[in-house]
Image (cartoon, rainbow over the protein chains, first blue to last red):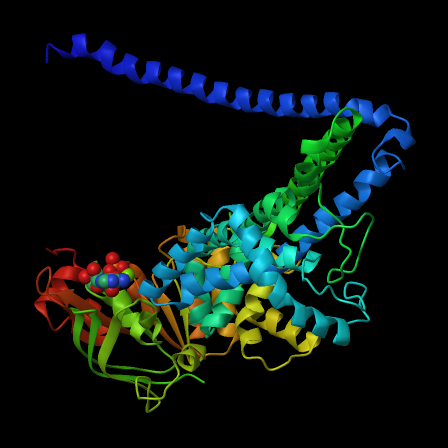
Length: 314
Length: 259
Ligand SMILES: Nc1ncnc2c1ncn2[C@@H]1O[C@H](COP(=O)(O)OP(=O)(O)OP(=O)(O)O)[C@@H](O)[C@H]1O
Ligand SMILES: [Mg+2]
């Protein structure tokens, strides 16, 4: 093998060179993301600064920045939470059905349909919300108000148009369903056969097996999926802007005519007609949204890390 | 508790593929029966038909009879879930539930039987099962820690504790020591020896010495050729199989002159 001496340097050199290029690209991409993030945060802070320092009576609404943003933040979190409360069990249920109950053909078809939901533009969801969900919600809202009226969420006179926080929550739930279902489906599929068989061999029914092996194994994945969905719901703009009939202030009643707006929708609606300090105010509210999303993600990580010792990872 | 298993003309299929053909054997109660044979001859497949675990694999089915104390496990209307509660199984790789504590792992099967149990009864059961699996001394101070934090051998004994906690009639073990070191293996073998006074035990093993050490009866499975179904070549007292087998194939396999 006289060629080896000539071959060796090149065959050794190539992977090293490739390694270095790849390492450089990966590092560059990582740094770029950090720079962009810092840039966004810096831009928001800089643009929001005038509103932060302005006199209260100059800020839109006339009562200061805090009074302007706080109801919007409340509305943002409330609608997103409603969406999450609806979408979490639904997506877990669909994902379990697809992975553990449905015959393969039905499972595939259902998977496609759910994925297709993700391809629908949010403006379409908004229109669907206004023309279909809102009217359909009126009898439900009346029922809720009648029988569950003792809860602060269901006030005495439900909205006749149905353009309520509840309807926004429902539409947001449908919008975040695909991403949550996709994540849940992935994690449930990864349940080790070993653990599924362990529970079946103990005499577990299929549902008991799911409760013993599949759900505990997938818990942190379900939480991550929910956080992805929550992030999307918090930032959703068009659908909310179209559907919700907004009134200033904080409104716990989710079926009434007066509803708290959301930050993203408020920015979209107000921005075209704003100038000067009003723009700074809107940017400040955007900054708050940024922090809410950040906090949500950190909370999710904390929840997942706290359970790490008992997670399926080891 | 221990029950006799009576297998008659059992054919086992994966879809259209006949994996094991024409097994007839009587597995005695309060004894250890070892199944040996070359890889792919269908030992695991056969073992899993004894508690209907093979049905978990799509397309897998059997024809023939498996009677446990004269009840056919495959008679119409028999619930596989009920069968698995009476015939427990320990797997090749230790598989405690990673999300459960040691305590919860032991009672996992008992909780399924949905009869409400007092905390004190439950504590006694955990202690009894862990003692039965020779694990109590090692874990009694950390019952609330995850089962996945134990060593491989301890995990396997935890799985045995979990299996005997539901008080089955039969315990099936598929190469329970193949992932363990020699010391853990000896611990499990001692345990099998103790358990046989209460249970019918069937163990698959690739280790001839192990089969000779722990079992009372031995069944040798073989393949005529690759692609052919596996079948039971010989089934007899372990003593006889290892000293004076009736078949040439058995002798070749045991003495290592195989293939
Ligand atoms: N899930 C399955 N689907 C289809 N065929 C299978 C499946 N599991 C096993 N088989 C086939 O059944 C036959 C018996 O396999 P089995 O696992 O029972 O062998 P074994 O004796 O346990 O082997 P080993 O000693 O290697 O564990 C083999 O031909 C195998 O390919
Ligand atoms: Mg096997």
